[in-house]
View 1 (cartoon, rainbow, N blue to C red):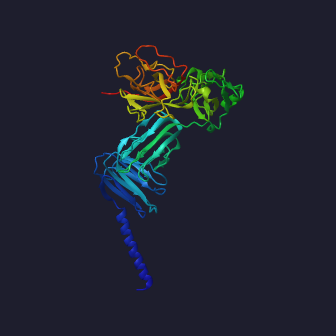
View 2: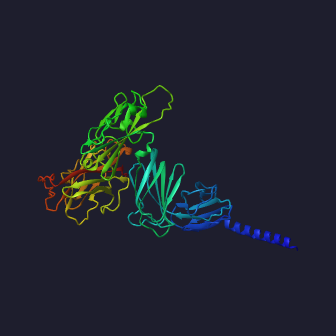
View 3: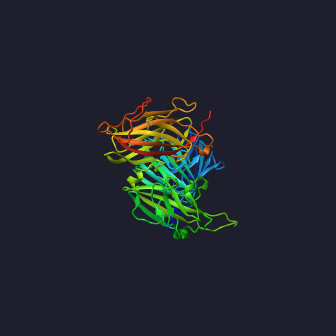
Amino acid sequence: MSSRLLKAALFVSALSMLLRVSDTLCAVENVSGAEYYTTIAPNCNTWARRFVSTGDSSRLIAHFRLGQLAANNFCKIYEGSDDQGKLAGTLEGGGLSFPVIVESSSAYISCVTNLTTETVGFDLQPFTLCGEDVEDIPYNLLSPMFPSNYPNYAGCVWRFQMNSSRTLLFQFSTFNTQSAYDFLYFKNEQGNVDKFVGSRGSFDYTVTATNLTVMFVSDYSGSRTGFNATVEVNFNPKKWTSARTLICRLKNAFCVEIQPSVECRTENLIIRVTVDEQTTLDYELGDTLYIALDREIPLSRLNDSCKVTGSNPVFTFDIDQCECVFKNENGTVSVSFLIWRFLAPSPAVIQRDVQNKLNVTCLLDAELLLSSSKIHTKIGSEEISAKKTGTFDVALNLFSNHYFTESLPGKVTVPNYIFAEVKLDEISASNGDFIVQLETCWATRSGNSNSLPSYQVVQSGCVAPLSGSESANAKTLIRNYESNFATFKLMSFVWTNFTDAEQFIYIHCDVTVCHNSTGQCPGQSCSGKKRRSVEDHGRNQRLSAGPVHIIQGTS
């Protein structure tokens, strides 16, 4: 046999052996166990597995723990034992893929890999479902059992649903998951996927979406403390490139940079839309102009002071009456408003008008702003001054347990308790010089602390009288007038004459921080005797927290 024929025979033999190995690696294989992890062979054109769970879970999660498929590759995940079952989802190639939930204890995995040269780690595991549908923002995103370690085999899904596209800001104060094994995924409606893993400390993440799905997946061991993030709509005045921005600086009750069209104050703030701004908004005399962060908000939900007509385009309102965004930087607080136009009724069938907007920003001195009773925040964190002590942070936070360690989720079922704590953040608990005093606390259905209906919790430093047939433990003042924090608990309830979708609770408190170095802070007396005035010993500040969506309990 010639050397050329010998080489050809050896090549055919080697190729045949390679194909037999590839067929063995890539052919359908039956596997079982509590969890299945494998690497998809790089020399497979197609790859398939039939998995049956031996655990107790009736759900599975499929995702790529390592690497990603090449473009035009994919893995289809079916419920049951073959590709005739219900398609649970597809792990796409060409980028990060989002996990697929299989509502079954068995799954069939069919992949087209087109002889990709990248090894991909495929994981199929049981999980315990957690998370919720999120309808209200701001929101606190927490890993399960935070600040304790999250459980193994977690599968948490949070679905953020907005009326229109929003840019959400996730501000992670901490992020610590097991590297290479436990992942936090994000996916918007366009299918764009991001993934975070490992120890990252604190960081910010923004994503634009109308519908956003967040999923946390942990494996069978090695859990960590997880993550804690506040979620809010990201508002950056600089992004409104088509809007004209007017700025007025306020210090010591007057404008430093005076503009005739804007008079910045906390009460009776005035914005005059001038002829120049009429070009920006492109409105006519019959149009309605309104102040709101969301162009699509129903006008009926706005305070009348936040709506004017094009024939008299002058807004006069208190700073808490119209929607705005606060930002505090180095003692200066920017308060930003967006002015939109609402078109007058027209017989036209269609229109092609561009919706322009005007951004008005007031730059306010923080001390002046915080001394005003017109300032409230949805997440209760403010600066407050106690006489002769300077400035520090005081916060109102809501919890779901009496240890005040588990942050309250976005929803509470009646009659579960809401636990509230007002605390000085930067002062040691052993420092007896600062006393937090809850003067008045109450609940409202909206974020406006002056709105009706309202429900009194604390009055004159004591538990408010019970109403109607309330039980004696409906509200309890746990700690007040004793140290640098105060606490109370409130049994959740629903508002009468409102639908389920309108059931929200906001908590508001008027708080005094008293400097007690000379023992001059008045003590608490709830025995019916008149309590001494605290006006000379501290400054009163209003804090707010919420919303909490209230769910009617069922029997």
